[in-house]
Image (tube, rainbow, N blue to C red):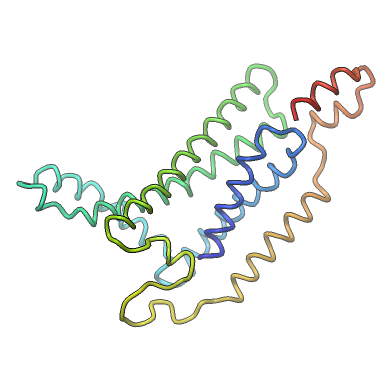
Length: 228
């Protein structure tokens, strides 16, 4: 899970950083595909992995949200509200939104890259893809801010489990097997896919047209280079 978390975070950060550069467009596309693949891994692992990683745990937390909101609204005093549960619900909602956002983000990016819609439709897809990317960035920043706020409120580093795999305090090991082999396999798969796609990806329609159009002037190419 830690390997998935950091590969997912780095893939999104890299894709967002390269979103506006034609020079790094293939890297942007490769990282987008990587995010989609990582989402697929997370779904499979959430269905077949250990209990602590089950997607049903996340779904149960989200299902409890309406009950908690109703109870908090009707509570006689603020002290009667289970604020810790509310904080955990916010964290679960942020994680769910980050995972769900991958689907429309990568689909819209795929459509833009392969120019499924020309003219006005293409502009709409580009705007939608950019909007979804910014929305996912906002959720990611909110997720980080929530971790920082909870660390301050609870006086305990809430990011520690994703850094070390351990939490302070007594108790049994919740994860008796770390499955390092699976983490290494996941890392190798991501690196291998990235190397393969960067070396063998087909040229996008727009790039192919630009490469074969004899009427494209050097001044136009210069403007593209300046934009990069």
